[in-house]
Length: 435
Image (cartoon, rainbow, N blue to C red; front, side, top):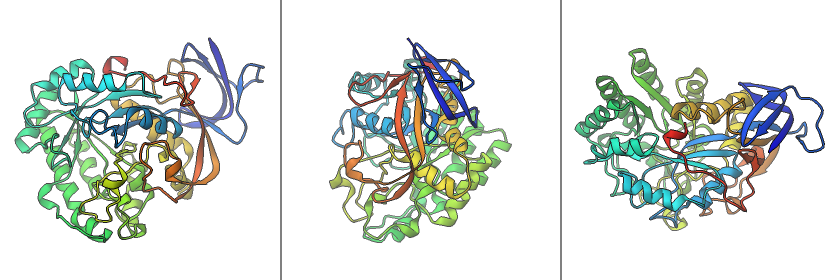
């Protein structure tokens, strides 16, 4: 079957241009000049831009075990509605966590026949599972997540210094990647109450920078590849840049909520904004944007981490679950800020599609180019809307973006050349062999 998308505006190889995208058997067969649309072609209007499907490498689906928080059907439907065509699921918050092959198989069984987009899986590095890491790698996980402090759930333990060194040594042995939630427990307080300012003060920038420095030191010693998750403090940029100059194999991500939301705007008691590390002030946000534009930060992913209303909306920043539900609105949130900062859409697409795919080795994702999967997003960059949590597709109607006025709306999403409608799950489960 052949299908042709004709777009007067499309993001191809980091520039916006007119083109025709020829799709054959789910792959892009050619990217040609625009030409005149035929009767069976999909001809897009001048008001929309054809983008590659986004690749979100940081999503907490939570199924099995905490499916009341989120599940594969709802998370992937929300992802598709936000232009995401590939996501990687985090190894924790599900029960069991993905720390051995049996747990990976349980998660794959839960996901099968439910997913509206393509889904791959991270493994976990926790105390006592060093012997499981090579087996998980062979089973197809894309890398391994660890924490340098309590993860928030008891069944996914954190690594102390010796455990971090051991995991990196094992992972370096087979050329894998360790992805790290880098915060230092000794630098963190334990506030309770309504005041957001107290919560931010309890997790200062030094909590991140101390942990990042330790991770870089350990990675350099082991000659291992590491990735810093959800960087929230711009103070970490210099450490990452210096690590690269020393030859450390380190990459880093940040998230739309750090780039689009600011501590000054968070009302006291609004625990829907709680995440770890926290949303910081506007000055820090400006510096994060600079780090992104300079290439110190490699990509932008959602860290979609939802929970039930009862766990999230406690009004107490000490007891509320820490996580932002945002996989459906990340592109719009980023584009809203990007337009205000004079940043072109092609840059946003590179940060949210091409770079995440490259970092995890998905060689057929994240670009409109011959040989790539025909994963596409039709985006209206000028449409404006106000986020209504109750109308989003993830399971529980709670999000920090609720009530926010955004610019840019996904009109349709296509997976391997077929439109994702939510009626029939067509996503595939990915392993490293699919790279």
